[in-house]
Length: 291
Image 1: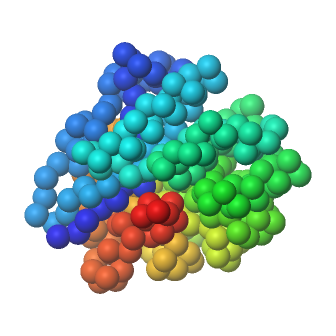
Image 2 (image 1 turned 120 degrees about the horizontal axis):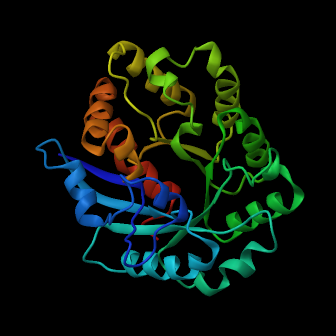
């Protein structure tokens, strides 16, 4: 049986914290906890959910402290599968060590995310001097940086990764190539800028790629969809790709069980040892989940 570490889950509840953007999406404006995460994956003789990484939810600034407390309470509870947390912080403003100081003693702290694909974040933000300095600091603290980027700006992230080679950078959702990726393949002309960025990022040994955040097209060729996944895996290599569900946001596109089944099938030919790395071991290494 395949043990899966889901490297990207979100949890929220209207009774505690709901990020502002969720209030505009009725399908998501409800409670999503670990029980819902398990139910979305279902039961199978082929796999079991063995662990998870909590990723910040882009909460309102005034809710970040409360979100962190909730995240660490979950990550520090041995009775549940959450093995660590990636919290929100700004690498583009101030000293990242000062921002994280209240949480540096938390064993569950594994990384930081700053969402970079939203309107307030201009192009090139991640190559500004203060951002690079803070990115290097994360590496010295043993923390990863999760990057959620616009597909046409991956080259900027590659420049940042090259400037901070000691920091693990985890590319969320394969750089957000869009629905055309699984329908048309990585060679689509519309994805030329994205692919150029992917190739430069893949050349950086400190960059990992989460394969997530995609919607399986209804009438696409299975060969094209599998070929698109192969294009990512072949570029990043066996040890720097990882499974992620993006629960519960994935409920808007391809839900957890369908995504798990697709990726198990698409990677079957690579063998069980490879799948063990992809579905768990690579995430554990990138986030130092065993530390």
